[in-house]
Length: 521
Image 1 (cartoon, rainbow, N blue to C red):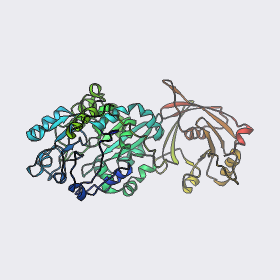
Image 2: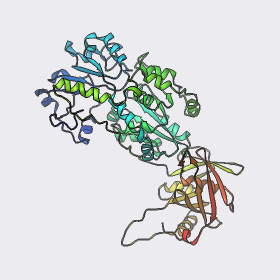
Image 3: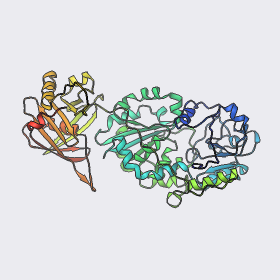
């Protein structure tokens, strides 16, 4: 709001009393902002106090107070906290503690929220104004980066299914902690990618190490765990479908992309009937077992999410780009200054971090259908029937390598060194077949469209992959999946039609040249 204005300076403080404050100051420090202790903040007087929550002893701070939108849709209430059945964020007991004045400005995202607030406290509603939702504005402005986000995540043409878990006892991860791995074990790796967005409160309560340990089986299968501060929104933009509990993340997804939303909420006391989130869950298909995912996605009715989000946000089509300007006008009015002439800039979302782990061994299912070879790959640590185990040499564990019928490696990047020893393609393949008696096929991935492989007892072959074209784009898959198809076909064929992730890839086989055989890895 104040970028580029030398008349305004910013300091941050952490209101004491939250159970989830461990990571709050760390987030401030990461962006290089200055923070002051709470006691010091209470001694000074400020021209403006901007808060993200009405809770805590905010009345001890001196200066006009502004409450920004927190979450979306005001869909939760917490029993035994504040006024009975009051939406969290609209509760007069927190907006006006000890009977004091309400915030000088309560910024809201939709006119209906002022009506809800007025029903609880006309006095608090008198200080409220509809400005829109700055977070939704960032998401909408970042939609053109969707392909860049998917590229950073390694999604490709796969379908990115994202789970969203709020915090507390009714959250998806508390109620259904095994769902991420159940989906990871069920979804073919070359057709689907899995992501998870976890509420910052759960990150703070659990800690990154503990959270990663609990989710280890799904993370080992390649699931993306979105970082809590900004990456969550970038992953949301990249998603093709969302599985959600009653947290408000789904409303942002519904408003921005209107893709399939599946409900994974088992009910409880927190969700407020008639709220936008309750309406979304009421009309979204419910995901029971992981095996029902495809059927649930097919039953989603286009427009369901956007209809629910319309009662939580101003119309994106009519008001996109104006929320920040409206909010800036209100803030400058409160501090008694004229805003700068230059318009406020919407900062685009960051490129998300890639998965922390990627599978290095696969249980591969193969189905021969005429001249087509259908390949489906699942995480190698999943106990499921498979045609063969494929493992990436030097990345997968030795136990999996010893059990693999297909061993492959990817060509290393050249490393400048005074002394070095490097395998040739033919030398490495021969070494692997000699060292691993259970290995029937060894191969090297030289590029996204070129491999060299040898089936035990056969000769070295060059595999050239012809990727399909879709709507002016070339769609590439993991070449290691093509090697599984080659491994499954009889020796001597010159072409293998691979069906991977629902797409056809033509693999042309020919005797490897001396140059290909002698290429250094």
